[in-house]
Length: 143
Image (cartoon, rainbow, N blue to C red; front, side, top):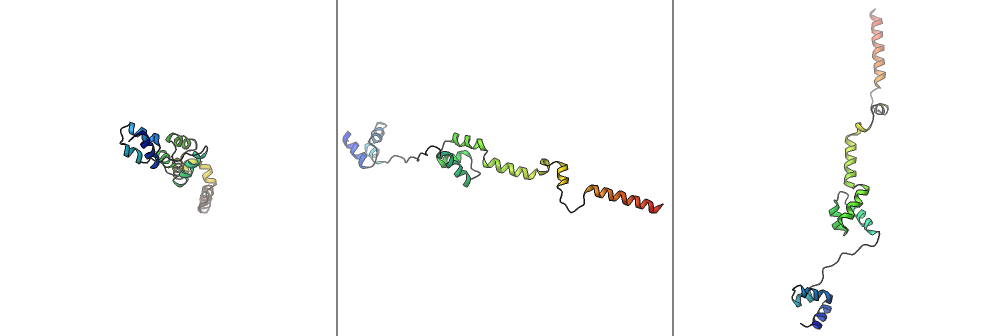
């Protein structure tokens, strides 16, 4: 094939002529170089839309890892990692909430727990006073 034929064949098949010539220079046959379409490019996100795309994906997939988010949104791994590090990943948030539910008594002081106690049992001070009063009445009856 001549130079003009390669350019014409590439244009006829929807391949950029420069791409076809570069392929031939790398050792491709002229037929394959002018007929195989270029790989599709991911659409680039406009300025300020990268973060929106990452958070939109994380809303639907809250436990996704940074590498998974990067592949799905077309954003670099480093960008996703930095963005998730600033706020805390949903995985870390969920794990922190689960840990907080397990260790509730560690976060609340004993005094606050006694004040907020809504159990059906009477307060401990009342029980101690009642026991002392009954002991005194019992001693009075015995004497």
